[in-house]
Structures are given as structure tokens and as C-alpha cells.
Image (cartoon, rainbow, N blue to C red; front, side, top):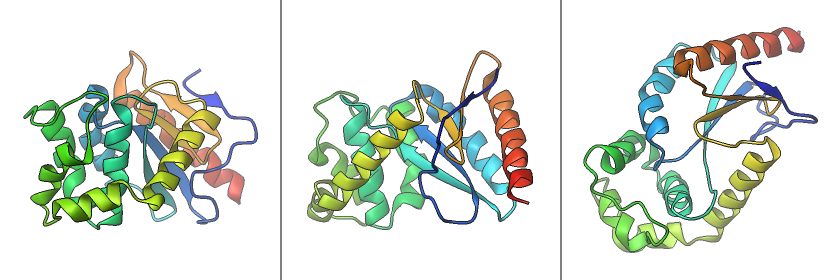
Length: 186
């Protein structure tokens, strides 16, 4: 079985009228960094009824600061420009630390290159809005039984995790599940 069914599954963002493909990922995950270009290429090929939603894993430790950074960047309007570069900074340039003590002050200089000053970044990073999104992301990963990254959850109902057969096989399974959901909607 290439996926697991989630009993009473709900999408991360219900009510959009689109088939949701939610990727649970982490900036600190080397597999997620490798997968990101493939996922973005896959996204470009999708019809309008498919919505890719990226959900940062907030599993504790070094996962949390980077999940907070994702939502802070989103709140500040720099997520699209900074998302791929963050993977590059962590895994290729190794210019950002990967440990549980990473703070807003450690990450703010990265976002400065996108015109976000340190205070604005820190305020967003520590905001109630980011707290709420982190809690929602954590609950989603728990509810959909995400055990590793990258994982893809189709419409909140199916969890597809990567295996030895690689990312191509994973995306083929996602395409098949999207087609099943599209058929179920009609």
C-alpha cells in the first residue's frame, strides 16, 4: 500500500472547493530539501482544482523555530521569495544553525535580504497568529498520522509518505488519489 487512509479525515484548509494536497515538511529535513524542486515542478502541472498547501512540521526541538519562520515569512509577505532559499541556506550554504536553540535573532538576518528588518521579523515570529498556525500545523500532522517528512496528505483523507521507491512514485500515488477525489466529487 502506497498510502494510508485517515478515518474521518479533514483537509488542512477545508471549504476551498479544491482538492487539497498538503505537504508536511521541514526546512531542516534533507529529504524535503531534495524534494522541493520536484514538488514545485509537480505543482506547476496541476489543474485549477488542485491546491498545494505546505505545512511545516512543528514536531519540537529544531523543527519548531523553522516552522515559526515559515509562518512569519508568510505573515510578512516574503514566503514565496524566501522558501526555496531557506532550504538552500540550511542544506547547501549551511549558513543557518540546526538545533533546538535557534531563535528569531538567528533567523532574522536571513529574512533581511528580503527587506524584512529584524524587529518586524521577531514580532511576527513571536506573534499570536504564528502561535495559532503552529498549533494548527501540529494538530494536522498528529490527526493525519504524519510520522516523517516529506509526507503528503490528499484532501485530509490519505497520507502518502516517501519510501525506497522515491519521490516520483510518491507523486504518482498523489496523482492517483487526486483523480479518485475528483471522481468522488462528481
